[in-house]
Length: 183
Image (cartoon, rainbow, N blue to C red; front, side, top):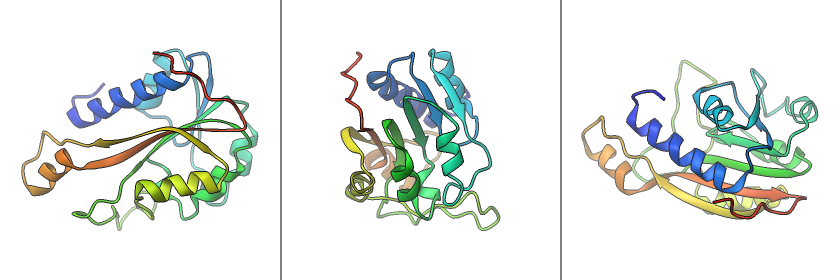
């Protein structure tokens, strides 16, 4: 992993959360382009397929239909969609391990004015994301809120990010039985 301490910590926690719920022989469709985290998942024995370039607000049918997998992962993707309900509803069955940024009172939603793919349309309260999952047919088995400490910066916001959770992780199922805790 890189020397980015906050990303390393979050990757370790993400991988531990995934391993707690998903057997390593499961095939995973990771929504989003190939990245360091998906490579780390492969290193743990998972077969991981990534998506690339699709607009999940409008082009999710072919992505879901073209992969036969037991599990779907989405790490910081749903907040970029205008309508995450559509793709969540379209997944017919399986396991879902995902994370989204939480709405925090001390910061506005992330927005890069120069890159339309790097903007948050949503930042969720946990109860909003729970409702989104439930309305799209998912049953939440476990959820956790994580702080995102930034040891590389000083100031009020980095201190608040150290104290207040800013990521929400969920393991959910649709049309299948949950996997019992593997650890």
